[in-house]
Image 1: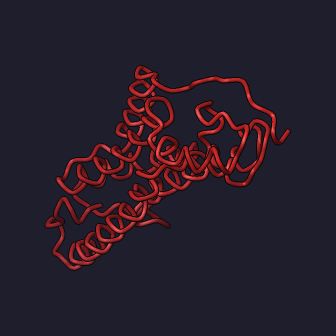
Image 2: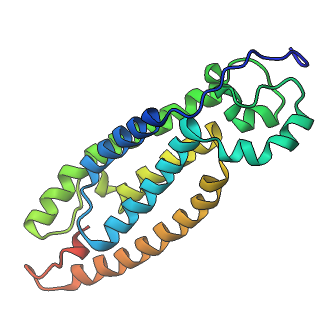
Length: 208
């Protein structure tokens, strides 16, 4: 209830959890994306920075909460800001009490995050065959999505932001969207060039 002080449960400084969570998630995503070209490695590297920053604030050092702690303590008396549940700042800003993990919005975010690797897994065999045969990927998810990789990365980030917003990830998110938009436009140009090229001359980058 409002005004009641929650028991202290400092949930940070857990470096092994930072490393394990970031590594498991990124290795899983990497196994379905296999970035080869330099631009794909940059894309995956930037996405990795988002995930590492997120895991660091979840389990390592709560930078955002520390920077906002004075304002948060004045606004939300009785909150134990360094308990894990209170790191979910949207929950705090709405003035809600109870376990945020049990709320529908949290479950919807989890479903969105979990569904994205499924899309990656479905797209990877199609992309692998297209790269091997030096043709355009047009089946599976590529029949309706030109860029399943980016279509999967964005829901992952969108899913995490309502659950655990942090200053670094909130700043990085629009930058990642801009980068993906530029990559998509470039790949679309290359795909159009590949379609008009003679058979057998499809370049590696255009077959994506």
